[in-house]
Amino acid sequence: MRILVIHGPNLNLLGTREPDVYGTATLAEIDSLLRERGRGTGAEVECVQFNAEGAIIDAIHRAAGRYDAIVINPGAYTHYSIAIRDALAAVGLPVVEVHLSNIHAREDFRRHSVIAPVCRGTISGFGPVGYVLALEAVLALAGRA
Ligand code: DQA
Image (cartoon, rainbow, N blue to C red; front, side, top):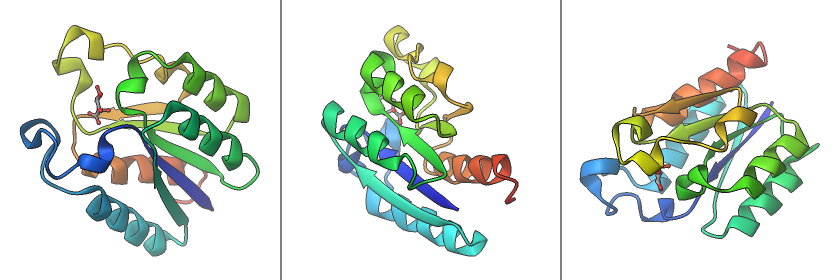
């Protein structure tokens, strides 16, 4: 089982970016937590981060035939990127959407996700643990947990 974790824009700044909203864990710490959890289940977890929308779309295209599931935090693209939504729909892999913060408890513009309808589910508001929960979710979907 191979799982691709895609982090979107500004998530490379985790640790120092608005720590009151996003916490103090760095992206490297989150990624190593995910790889470790993957190893414990026999799943291979690869983590990538891109600020550019096109780079995220390219990563989604490349995932077809190479990965069994995608975990994605699209960052601000969540709220308006029809192109990322279409890419996820096109490859047809099971997708779990993750947000560190509770997007429903913030500004109005963050409450709507254009990505959610093409995902199996969304995990929002649990900080870095949300990624681990998303990993559990894709393993469960694949009958591996
Ligand atoms: C986020 C929520 C988005 O609204 C925001 O633009 C982000 C991070 C989250 O993880 O809580 O960049 O996706």
